[in-house]
Length: 101
Image 1 (cartoon, rainbow, N blue to C red):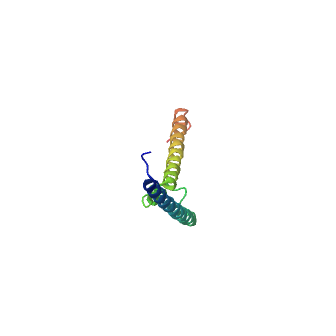
Image 2: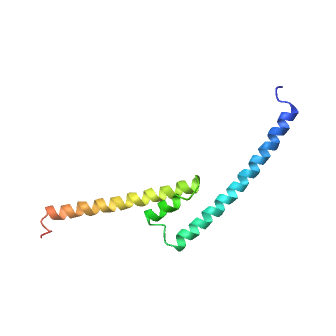
């Protein structure tokens, strides 16, 4: 066997340290997400793409940042669809002769 007992013990010891750090990171990420959610709710920021992107700029890489980007792009998609629909509707009205100057 190429792994001796000292190597195995060291790997286990370092593995435990990694698990402890991961737990601390998870707790910090949860605290950050809770704070940001509360702040964005209190300041009515959830439906404003500019507000969302500003918050994202201050967040570290992670799942919460990813989800905020998803929300940002979904809002952009909805706004673009609404703007596109109003352009189509306006054009249809113009073509039908219903809009007059």
